[in-house]
Image (cartoon, rainbow, N blue to C red):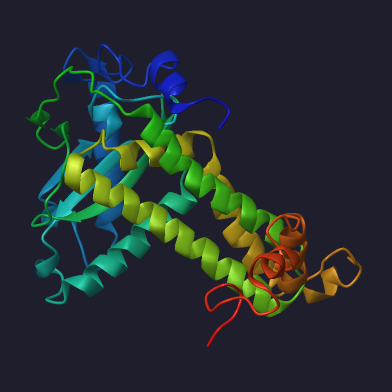
Length: 294
């Protein structure tokens, strides 16, 4: 990392003395931002054949901009609450369809308020939501008012957890630069997607168990802030594209393949505990478990 999470936390005022002054007057949400957000949500849902503004139970602001832990990278996390069962009895299908609708909208639009992007989410009214700050934009009132209480953070543990993801990404980037086979590109793509899924699950588990200031969630935010997650997304796209770009790789003679890359990595370790030394210690046939199998 360019700086430790401890430096980021303290120097960049990750935890602030007040709510964001460009959105809040003390604990009152600014009306010139409230009204446009409600209009955006209304336009978002009114043209859909499955949902309508009348079905919306509430529109809520959550996340760091409804709390004291905002920074320059924070989004306006706006959750649109519906009863998924009103749309279809198979709520898993509803969730998948609405996630797709949300994804396409966020992909096509880049709406910002005071240099902070707005992100829309659909949420089932029966789904539990863990947040220390939750504000109803529909009713213009606090559901859960945050308290200004700086948390105790294990910065070393945050950095350690984030570093494990950065190391894995560095290896994936190196591998991608040294392979040329379609199947190997597919392996890297699958591994990168698995790493992203692991990262998202880590954050969700941290939020569910210890909330916004869990080590897992703070590690996720650290990786987002130093653009590691953006690099991972780029690698997922690049590895996918290379699976179908074989003609462009024919001129690159430096690419060796996974086995050659692995061999090169292992050879760099040297042989301080290699075969010869084992034989000197144990004789020509080392015992079971030392380089042999039954």
